[in-house]
Image (cartoon, rainbow over the protein chains, first blue to last red):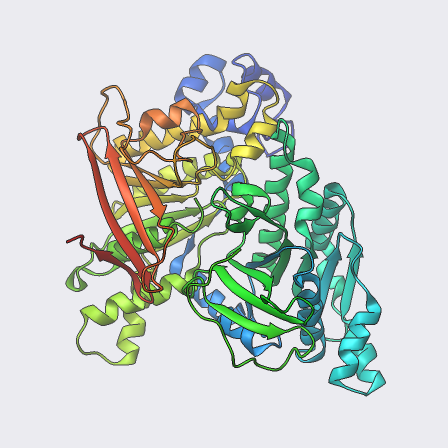
Length: 327
Length: 254
């Protein structure tokens, strides 16, 4: 709702606004919905002035159409695919995380979502030498673990420190601070946050359900609206800054007893790709996990790959394919 | 529902519209309004290239690129991030439609994106909550009547109806119809197809297409099906399809 105020555009002065208020027109939407001819008669304002103001307001507040060809050229030059470092996961994601998109990791507690986020962050900061923004909502961020992972990749302390510096951590514990953090990043933060020549290429939110599930339920209005706002912010950051966004989510069971992502139907439309992580059956104590693709616009769904959390860069040759019952 | 093939179907329709007539297309302009940053240009172009490749027999790579480019020039994409912006953009597009008669299709994906935000911003009064969408619906109806364009809009099915799993796509035919709108309930009643957008929107919809995803993938291929109900004809028309590399392949039952 954009309220009509003096000075909102040249040509709108106080008398103009007063005249419009007699017809109960207070917002830009109301103004634009009226035919200028009718308005000129009813409010005794000049037709020319009305048409001019309408044109300026529309030019200010509408979104502009972009030709498909230009959009395609732009995307070709700006989209990048970030490898996750694990060949099995890369195969699942069609070579890695795509910039401009939101990818979701779902899984029950202990299925390895945070560890996967760590491994991907370490890979991006060390291998690809790009900055990662890590928003931690559960308090699970542990710098020692990151260091441990880096130590397996290189023994050069200088390199380790540089890679750690490229991972920026923000701690937020409720949805309003999350929104503030994202809005801040979007307005000024991302340019400032890039370190040492590499720009921010990935944003991780671990986990998005920790801040959103407490506000859902009950009358639902405010909670759902905040959920859609968070989704909108993440998407805008992903698209406008060409960043790959990775979020984690919990799982619930649906009517048939199958596992599905949490946060409900409205959130389910938000990520472009979704991967379900599970422990391998009969090997509860090992570090093996299976990743199943449950939503993708590029590959056939229900593809499953096995990977090892401890040996991230290795590929497991025993991959379980096809119709594996999720339970 | 998510993942039920609505956007894929839209890509299929748009490629049909923008490809030149000698490749089997309709060669009309398309305006795509994207409300949730959903439009995947790379996927769209791969579908377009697939379709052009199967239609043209010879031609160098440069020619193919040129054709793709000229097709893409017929498509305009607009991003809206609030219902106010959507309304104002539709007003702006009215000028575009009147000045470019080759524009024949308007796609809005998805029109339900601002539902929760509007509900919250409108406070307690339902009419306040629905005001923007109502204005959009009236405007869309006017565009349809005055300029004879076809409008497709997708809606996410998020309201439980205690039936089955579906996603919804609403279609406005280019023929006008002012008879009373009574929707035949499809015999495959669905869990999530309860119409929840405002009454003004329900009034202007002339065709309603529901998308379902089948639970059991056959031979690793997910089968999707659609059921179309319309106020103009009786009964429900159904068809199924699966998604392959180059887009949608329709499956003929028996």
